[in-house]
Image (tube, one colour):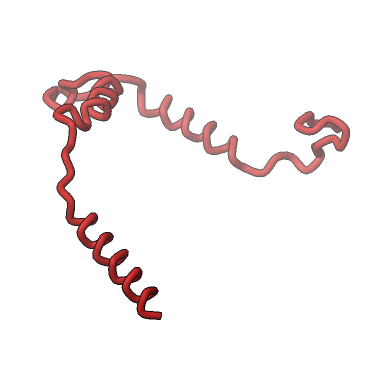
Length: 91
């Protein structure tokens, strides 16, 4: 029993001392992340431009959004998926 307690104490001390060991990071640590993030930016100076954004007319955008939202409504009740070919709509 004393031998088991001694082993447990030694393991605990080893874990505590090991957890306090200094760690050294590479000088280029995080470079890959920063590089990947920078490559995903289309226009890095976009935040500096104060000109109004020009694009589609408001009515065109409203129509496009309405069509987009209709895609998520329930499908027609007369159509159902075929049991034989999954994903193909049949009447």
